[in-house]
Image (cartoon, rainbow, N blue to C red):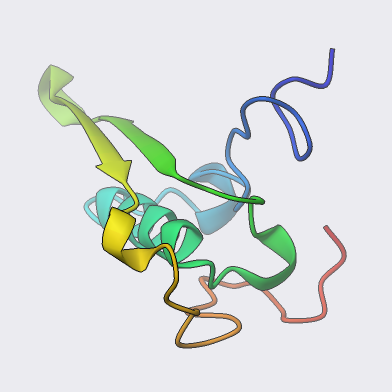
Length: 98
């Protein structure tokens, strides 16, 4: 239906997900946190989700560990412009076609 991608109601894995990062043990949660913070700040360049307000992080680890975290853009940020056009890279080329 197109509801779970850019332009849809929900956008899932705009960065390509953990597999696109090589799924490094121990660093996956940090990569998810960074991506969601960058999305809420509006600093993701071409992979930016339009008007991102909330984000959900879900990570399963070794031994059955499960972490679910919700992020919400603070209302104080509503009129604050992004500090950078694109933050971080995590392997993304600024001119990559998405």
